[in-house]
Structure formats: structure tokens, C-alpha cells
Amino acid sequence: MSTAAPEAVAGARTGLAGALVVPATIFVAIGLLGPIAILFRYSLNQFIPGQFMVDGLTIENYVKFFTDPYYINVLVRTVRVAVICTLACLIMGFPLAYVIARTQSRFKNLLVMLIVLPLFVGNAVRAAGWMTVFGNRGAFNASLMGLGLIDQPIEIMFTETAVLIGIIAVNLPFMVLTLQSVIEGIPRNVEEAAFSLGAGPSAMFRRVLWPLALPGILAGTILTFILAMNAYATPVLLGGPKFQMMGPLVYGQFAQQNNWPFGGAISFILMTATILLTVAAHLIVQRRYR
Amino acid sequence: MSTPRTSFGRMALNGAAGLSLGFILLPLIFVTWLAFFRQEIPSFPPEGYSLKWFSAVPGNKNFVEGFVLSLQVGVLATLIGLLLGVPASLALVRHRIALGPAVNTLLLLPLVMPGIVLGTSLYVFQIETEIATGLPLLGSLAGLVAAHTLVVVPWVVRLVTASLQGSDRSIEEAAQNLGAGPLTTFWRITLPSIRPGIVAAGLFGFVTSFGNLEMSLFLVGPGRITLPIAILQYLEWKIDPTVAAASVIQIVLIGAAMIITDRYVKLSRVV
Image (cartoon, rainbow over all chains, first blue to last red; front, top):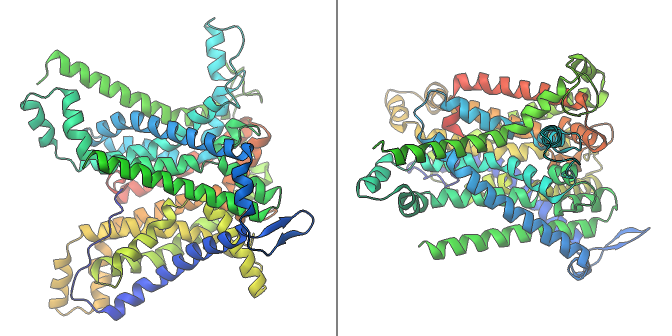
């Protein structure tokens, strides 16, 4: 899953090239950057209940967010959930990605399909699966009670644990696919060289595999982090109305409160927080492993 | 090299990988299991098994209309996305264009842009466009297709540029030396050599659009919702074998699409 810019080849007619690339560029520029600019402008407007939205130039929506402990809490909870889920995805994803990257089996393609399928099926369907497992009479509690391990069902639905498990399962395929493509690019020889020079598996992993896979680790971590920060269906279905995260909070401001300026401001805070934390992680990793 | 220690390590590695794979698949397994329950309440162990819930799915108006709308939007957005993305990829790989890397980054940007942010910003954008032009855009098919095209284009650009970089440019040059014009070269040489990339781009684009939830949430109108949103709204109310059966139908359709695509292009090489 590389996003590196392709190298242009010299000696072509620029007029034709322009005609080929301009439609897509204009479409994405207008469809992506235009709306974000308008949203930012909206977030500086005023909201007066009953009057809907009033044109203005004020930062009161941002001040409201950062002075209310309720909203700060939602932001902190969102970041915490995203960090935990991203680390869990990295730890759980690496062995699976490594096995798929290195397997000679003819079932390799099947394995990849089994990982891509859940990705394609969508978050709501997968949340439905977890709802079946987590409920008071769901598979998990029924198994434990059947085995006589517990008398009362354990409350998992509508807890942070349920949301964490749900988001990890949603994001894990992204991490695995990203890591797998990077590990496949690392020649098997360098691992064997490390082994034949006397390194054990853990030394080989730490000194050879990990540094070489670092670009992929970073790409996968960033992708899963962004997805976790912005999760919507999983917190709504597995966390319930009381478990607020940033995604559902934005939707509520738009759909239920009709407070577009404040919703726009939260949306911007979410985007900025995501980008800042991503850049920070990037810098830390670069400094440590240069 | 197969000392006891390394074979133990191998087993531990495979075990960890198996656990992760099981974790990814677990929700799909349970939703499929639930679809065949006889009783309506999702309590384990099931009292018996039945196929009756599958016949209840076509009776649910939201699921059927959502499916049709998702199909329409997915097909249209994929076609437009291919029409925009394939030429752009050609230009980016085969020609030296001004600001090439910047254009490439811009075209891939919607992929990493959070769905919630995309949804909110497109929502206000469509409202402003409505005010400016008087055309009803929000909640319309055109509005949805335009938004979904935005998330299809990056998949097309990413997969088709990768495919072009892997194809041998000297064959194109040979064709042109032998007298083929640019159009013939494209049609007879370039296009066939990047067909796997285009097929994969079409599949990924379509499936991304079909499964899109966060962005679409802001753009659908009353009485016009996509299938993922219909499933989400149902689940907010309750979970039962009917919604599980609808999910199973979706899993089977997407699985079939993947297997068919896999005949043209090996998925393990494109993702």
C-alpha cells in the first residue's frame, strides 16, 4: 500500500498530459478543498437557537469546546481509544502480516481474501456480529455461564471494552495489508543472513525486520489511527448513547441539534487533532530511528 | 535450521497469526450464525435453525431500496471514477507534468481524509451550491454519486499508477516505432497491459462506495438511504436474525465479486 509519487518519464507532450490529468485534479480540488474551506468558514459563524445560523466572525465555537469539560472529555476519550486500538492492531497485525508475506502456500490468495472480505463488508455488519457475541445472552456470556464460570452475565455491551474490541477488529485488516506489502518487499536473505551470523529470532526482529519494515509500520499505524479517531458506527452501536466519541458528537450537532457552526468547529478540531498527532508520531519515529 | 527452538517459535508465530485472523473473522461468523436461528432473540445456544429470515429480507423496504440505491451509486461513482482516474494515472506515470508529485498527493488525499470530515464538509458545500444555483443537490442521487466519486478516484489512481509502473514501456515504444499512432498504442498495448489494475480499481472503488457509511450519513435524504445506513439504523433499534440475514446476503455478494475479480487479477498482488 505505497503512496509514493510515481516518477514521470521524460519526452512526452505536455498538452496531452494536461488534458488527461486536469479533469481529475479539478474534481478533487473542488470536491475536497472547497468544502473544507466552507466548513471552516461555517465554524466561525454564530449559532443562535431559534434563528439557526448567523453570519459572523468569531472563535466562540472553539472556545465553547475547549472550556467545557464534557467536550474535553470526549476528545480525550477518543484519543485514548484511538491510541489503544492502534497499538493493539500493530501487535496483533504484525505476526499475521509476516506469516502471509512469507508463506509459500497455495492458500495465500485465500488468506488475503479472508482479510479483505471483512473490510469490504462494512462496519455496521461487523458491529452486528459483535452485538451477537457481547449481549447478556450472547455467545460470550452464554458460553461462560454454560461452563459454570460465572453466574451473572458480564456487562460488555455499551462499555469501552466493547468499543475497543470492535474498532480493533475493524482496523486490523488495514494494518495487516499495509504491513504485509512492506514485509514482502524485504528480501528473505537479510533475515537468513542475520540468523547465520548468530542472531536469535528476537534479535533478528529488533535489529533487522523492524527497522526495515518501519515505513510500513508508520503507514499502517497512521491509517489505523485516523480510522480509530473518526470511528462512527462502532461507538454508536457497541458504545451506546452514553459512550460519546468525536465522530458521533459531530453527527449529533449536525443532524439533531442543527448547530452547524459548532458541528463544523468540532469537525475541524477532530481533523486538526488527527493531523497533529499523526505528525507528532512521524517526528518521534524519525528522530529515534534515523 | 529446524532446531526445536525455531520450530517452537514457528508454532508460536503461526498461532498468533491464526488468533488475529480469527479475531478479524469472528464478527462475520457470528452474524452468519444468527441469520439461521429459529428464534428471533439472539440468545445462545439457539433453540433451532431456520431459513425463514432470508425470506423476510425482501419484505423490508429500507433494505431493498437501500440495496438498489447503493448499487446505483456504486456503479455510477465507479464508472466516473475510472473515467477521471485512468487518464490522470497515465499522465502522472507516462508524462512529465508540472507539480506531478503534488497532483498525485492531492488525488490520493480523499483516501486518508476522515469520513466524518468529508461528510460534514460536503454537506455544507452542497447546501451552499444549492443556494447559489437553485438546484436540489443534497439528498439527491447526483449529490451522492459526486461524493462517492471523490472516494473512488484515489483507489483508481493508486492501483492504476502501480499497474502502469509495472508494465514495460519499451513495448509501447516498439509499437510506435512500428507505426502505431498514440491512440492505437493506448488501445492495443497500454490498456491490455494494465487491465488487471483497472479491474482491481473498479472492484475496490465499487466496494468502497458500496460500503461507505460515515460520509454518506450526512448526504442521504429522507426516504433515500443507502444499504449500510439502513443496516445501521435497524441495528440502533434492535438486533435480530432479519438484519443478520440481510448482512449475510451482502457478505455473499461481496465475496462472489471478489472471487470473480480474483480470476482476472490476484488480490494478494494489488492490495
